[in-house]
Length: 251
Image 1 (cartoon, rainbow, N blue to C red):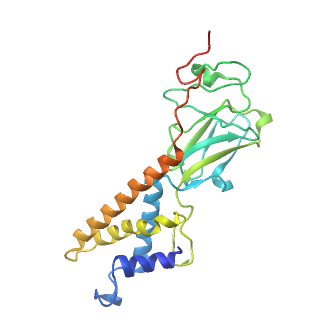
Image 2: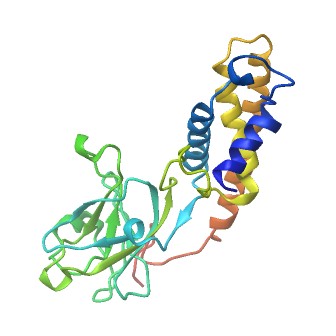
Image 3: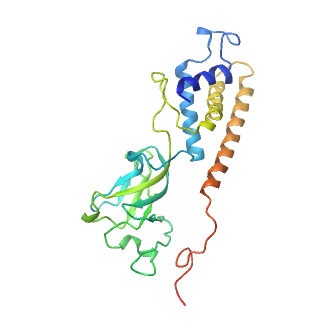
């Protein structure tokens, strides 16, 4: 739906904020600006809690351009999580490692990979990445990705392609009523329950606090449902991967 439809649904059908049921300035309890602010908060909270807004195609979000000798890259501000990363024309994804505990990453030139030496690998094409590096103040909460090993001049300008879970790219504004909502169509009405909760908790009218709790409960139930859907879509059957995950090569 577009913003005009979301705003109309929230005001008329969810909050019942019209001349027949409420009186006050302009016969409305909440201004358009206020309700749009709550709709923005609702879609942001939905995206953050469910990680269901996936993107593998928007260039400014999903493409990281490597630079010679640079290992650390601050990702687009909308990114909540990196699902996978793939280097240039490779057909397989980069291995994911962590600062606290490095996991094994396969290499083609040797039948094993020593996870304790990841930081000392000679510069070259990336074989692994991490996203748990400490953030600095200037990044303002953006996800930081580190590639291993550091790129050389041969990798300069090459692309690492990401599959991401992200926030909406733009906030709604009352000045652009035809803006499309990025949340999946089937969840947009349920998303408005959080906007209604915000509106009713910011009201001193008797009975609104009870109504606010009902909208809160409906929104939380929606989150649980969508989280289950996301886990089901991402489920990978258990597999034995020799040479990784605790298994070693040998006879």
